[in-house]
Image (cartoon, rainbow, N blue to C red; front, top):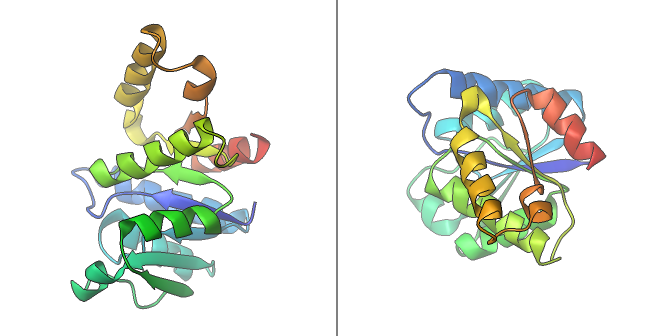
Length: 179
């Protein structure tokens, strides 16, 4: 595994534990010699994880739509920054560049990106591992809802199992490598 796409918030969230987790995931990526692929922003958790990967000497690749660069949220100090036409192109390029995916805490965009990758795996478009960094139980409610979807017959258990959860970034990466 050479690179992991990380989906996370363009805000910091209400608790400093989320930024701490972003720094912890950055350290785990660098310790495992895995490059970061992410949305290319300099704000929120996106900025925190990219800055920490770079500070630790790791590789950080951003993929950002032109419209967001124009709003001055693009990170200028990355190893590589790809400026693309739109969000569709961004998600496709991030998927192509990554050997796996991790969703950190974030908002609707994070969830949308996560579920697109889960759907693509379910459809056989990719066979890359998908993880949830379950910081302070952030994804417990989502996991319960996915269990509900399984129980009501709308999601197969094997498809629900595509999302590997762990609160420890190092263990999550190890589990993704073994998936």
